[in-house]
Length: 296
Image 1 (cartoon, rainbow, N blue to C red):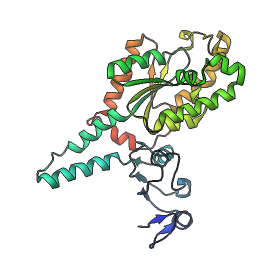
Image 2 (cartoon, rainbow, N blue to C red):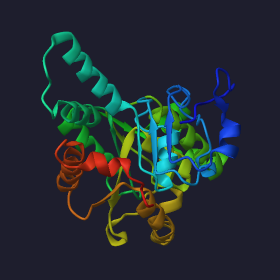
Image 3 (cartoon, rainbow, N blue to C red):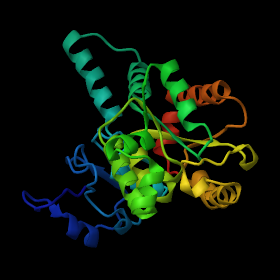
Image 4 (tube, rainbow, N blue to C red):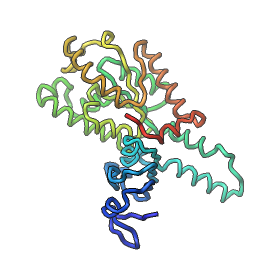
């Protein structure tokens, strides 16, 4: 076992030396606060330097998935954040202080309940795919707070999106969008978040949303989508089709779950709710799925 630290004090090796001398390590466990909210953009090591890893654990539980965990999952390496360990410690403390033995499934049940209450439900998809209306339905049905990134942008800017595009251009709007998503995803849990259709154009947006969220793609066929006059890139049928075909592979690649949005709002919303409940169930086996690499 090799201990790493920034300074290399007390017999530890530095991160730099570890990357050079111990690239054959099989497991990596982060026991530092590096990557913890509010500094959740940090990552302690470059996983690309450790080519033999078969498992990564980060004891941090806020965010639910740190940059380190997300990087491992993207690389196909099984990884887990610190929430399960936190719950296990609580159960062990209960047994120690009460002298009573907790039943075997208590840790899994508490973990699943916490994940179900803390994890955000994130909606992505084309303009007019129903993200806002479906999101509001889900929020009302589940008692969660609903947030629409486009509406936050409009409120903060004091002008609509069409005006932002006209005055500052799309690149400026995308910068505002990325900063808005960073703000909403950083430290916020238990919400329903509807994103703008172009949020997938910057992979950093998805990475941030996935740290505390499960991403659902509302996949509505092109024929069922409507041009939106307040969205410059989808204001007519031609631009709508062009945008649809360009973004489709990104929605497919970045989502955790694809939800067919062919039918009405309640039907689509209930599909999302049902999948999320199953995903959060301790008996679904989905915790194991979360720790395995994404393969995306």
